[in-house]
Length: 355
Ligand SMILES: Nc1ncnc2c1ncn2[C@@H]1O[C@H](COP(=O)(O)OP(=O)(O)O)[C@@H](O)[C@H]1O
Ligand SMILES: [Mg+2]
Image (cartoon, rainbow, N blue to C red; front, side, top):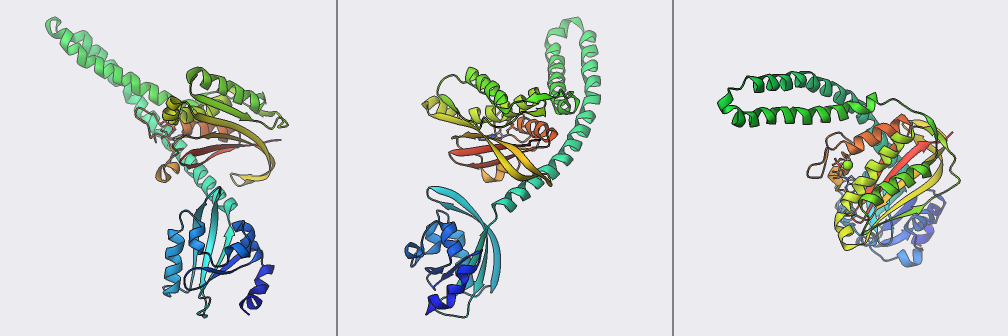
């Protein structure tokens, strides 16, 4: 009887599940079975929230729907599953006037949308960032020369008998001024370095980075390659690209330090061709995708949205410039870097359009 009423839903492309008052699945249309990778036979009677590792939020929304706290609600959720990719969905909850099946949930996978939103946010910020950095760096740079010079003059004027002790202070001023100078130069660097453009092979970039990392972390770390050798060369600046990938891989190696000690640290360099991608609002027929994946501890959710910002570092003594620089360089190639991370799996994806 119920299934007859609902049979029409099978024709929909969006996924629909209908739950009873205990949150158990009474019906799932064909699209839902597809997305959940399970047949209606195995789904029927299961609690929807228990299909996911982090089903609490889903359960909470279901409870609210049941208590009629709303009649209709939309929500973006990331649902973790055992052995499968997390499911990024937009769910809409509808309260039905039927005690047998009080709640209907419609959902669609919006991976593309979520990714695109995040990418755009990164790019929007990075324009502002660049402006801010440049201005700030210049503001610091100008008086810095004066401070250093004055400290040097002061040092020359120090009375002979106290000179040794007092020179420690002037040396601190000079050293710190030099340190700031280096930092400022690095902040200004990406805008200064001239573009040297030639034909670049992405695998040459990977191999160079791989050997640099292996030279520094020779034990306890393996770097696997999974290359699509059909990726064509493209016009680019080899040194900039190496620097970008190196910065990403270097972070990964640093994050892997515990596993390196244990001897089971792993990185993967994976390349693929992707078709029809949108990068910074422009659509490309063809692009290359380089994944730098590590099995380290991952990046916490509150951090992951900020790692491309300048001076954001999670490390003692980190400058927080590595990823900012990498992002700037990749953007100069009209590409973008994105990051997805969970404990044990961090994936930096570099996307670069191909001709
Ligand atoms: N693969 C990774 N695994 C874990 N954390 C990472 C990874 N890559 C980057 N991070 C985090 O992002 C931060 C910013 O990186 P970066 O911009 O290179 O600056 P820095 O390395 O100087 O801290 C790092 O400090 C680290 O906390
Ligand atoms: Mg770094």
